[in-house]
Amino acid sequence: MPTQILLLYLVFGGLISVPVAAEVVVCLDSSTGQGVSGATVTLSRQSNVVVEAETDAGGRAALPELPPGIYVVRVDKPGYIDLQDPQSRGRQLRLPPPSGTVHTYLSRTAVITGAIFDAEGRPLSGARVVAIVRRGTASEAGLIEFGRAAHSDDRGMYRLHGLPPGHYSVAAIPPRGDVSTDPFMPTFYGPGSPAEAIFMQIMPGETRSSVDLTVARAWPISISGTITGIPDGEDRREAAVALVAKRGLRAPIAYALTGPEGAYTFDNVPPGDYAVIAWAPFQGWEPHVHAIGKEGRTAAVNVPVSSANARIDLELRPVVQVEGQIVLDNANLNRSECRGIEPLTFRSADAWFGAWSAVHSPDGKRFTVTSLPVGAYRIHAPQLEGCHLSIRQGEKAAPSGTVHVDASASLTVVLSTATGEVSGEVHAEDGAPRPTGFVLLARADETGRLELMPIDGEGRYRFGDIQPGTYRLTAVERVDTAGIMDPLAVPPDSAMTITVEAGKSQTANMRMIRK
Image (tube, rainbow, N blue to C red; front, side, top):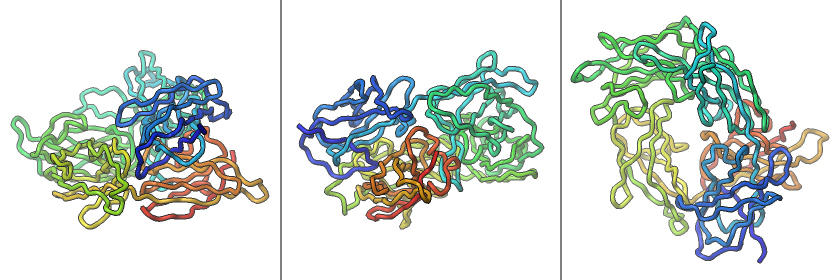
């Protein structure tokens, strides 16, 4: 029986119920192009493992006959990482696919080591240390924590491992004292502030050592103000306030409890873009315990900090209840095989607020989210298979599934299989041979997963069945680093940001990156 092919897609349409022929996945080393033996290829469906196979000496893994449908594929080997799935979330896969062989590019992982010191130059133990990447677009690049955190030992030493090659900085968050009186600041590799973080290019298999940080630094800037609208508490009448790096780490720069008349102050604030977030009643400092219950009150505002002290007053407002309905796109109803709409999650876009899960009605057609602080949220269903969702707030579509909630609101979640298409040409420099390599497609608002398409002999590429949304396109000679996800590390003429709309095709031409 001839070998058919697994081809990775972002979204998938209708399915039929007949078995398909055995398939082959080929795992290649991203630097050498050689097959990687001993890698485990796992296919799962609805959270259940269906197939587990190991690659041979040539990096090939044969899969048995499988019924058509949507699967999640993961490729694992110690010391390696799948560059198309750098956070090991798994990638969606459709059977049966068009012809071809699935090529997965594994890269040797990298390591960053160093030491953390306090203001007096003494080793600092117990600091939380994280690798930092830039994600988003060139005009709105945010700092995002990537991979597993490490903690400095009694010598102040730390080790971040299992990183895909790419561009990184490092941040250290000191151990907490009494956060109501002892604010703490993340310190970034370089001069110390988020805006001045130094990024390093880490190569496959590299260990970058002596990346040292000193966590304390005094800044002359302060943010202060008054919080009003604080509800009466049983024992005390106060609000909690957090200063958070905007589009940055999910860790506060500082905490405070309001004093008499609702006053608060943050001293030693480094320049940058922040959010000041307040909530009451005070339940605890962690994101998942603030503003609990229907009586909670919150407020938030964005604050740019340059060189002058800032005064920010906030009035707390009641939390919000959101009600909504779930509908199928009638134009695609017969093709739809949507599963996994639960849990439907509201995740805060304001840096620090956590995530809320919707409660569904028994028939699954309506949902409710209670105790939601005012702010912007991205709505997604992490286990959704067979379709994608879009959001309508009233009569308006919400781009990228993001809505701003400032009062009791009604939303509509539309499940659809309607997709878009992007194609184009990749041009070489004048006089250079016709380019060979890949075009990579990645969601601009995500931290990892990407799709790739080989450039054909005419210098062309095509992505079909793309979920609506905002993406970054990049042309590369080889797939050997996750640095292509960094919007500031890629030459502007070899990358672009595009918006894909359902049912539409568009052309995007670009130049090849030369390494």
